[in-house]
Length: 346
Image 1 (cartoon, rainbow, N blue to C red):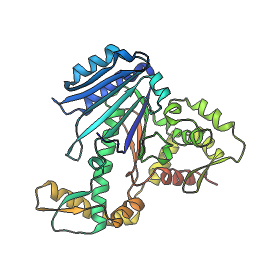
Image 2: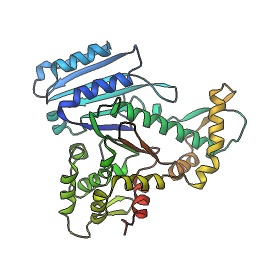
Image 3: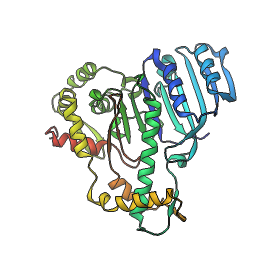
Image 4: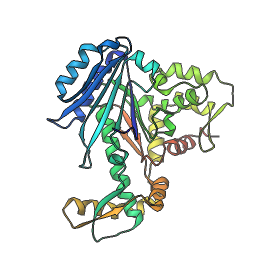
């Protein structure tokens, strides 16, 4: 299996890690499907399990529960049915606290077998109707965002129990600042401002996000407050985030923050111009209309998505929240607009 992204990272307490892995696998593995997996440990090297293939989900979970310690690393690979209808290979890793401290990547992480599984190079679309690069790019963006959000919820929130408290989709093999992610998850929507505090302690203080993602709000607040007045960090292409803006976000009403994020997530005019044609083409394709294959890797396709792919603010029934866009974009523009609307950007 290649190590191509995008990567999905998730944080949970030490006592919840095996339960979180088991719940996520139950929601991800194709019903009746099997897994391949291996287990290794830095505190018990002689207990390493060699690769086992075509193992049932229950057998794999039982093996993990029997030997999981702070130094354990579990790697599992299996088939997943995406919300868009295709089936792909997904790898999920689960790390004990000591393993994660030595090799920081987060307690749970997942990645596709091939980047093209989630970011396809071509699409089959219905013939006829409105055809343009912009419509094709919008179709691709909708499909990718739908798949990524669905996988994030199935890994982080497969049921009503909040085992995973935070997560992020990134383009890199490292859990970087949430402002540079294409999607984030919080089990409690009241913690959405952590998307600004975590970049601060990462970019200014050098903390690994995989380690700081579980910090309580008061600890993050104290870390940011300890910086000199007027201090700033560069979050993206010269854009700066001030200490004062982070402190205000951490003390702002979560409801006001979410309202501002939702208002800032309204699609722009260019997206609205092609959205209906894209939805009609998607419906015609699903209904069995004749199709053709289109290449969606041109610079024009990519540029349209980079500039116009919409942002989603998805409030979950469990009380959690997902912020998401296409991987060609980051969440920073959404946050910048929301902070400006609240008068927090100077």
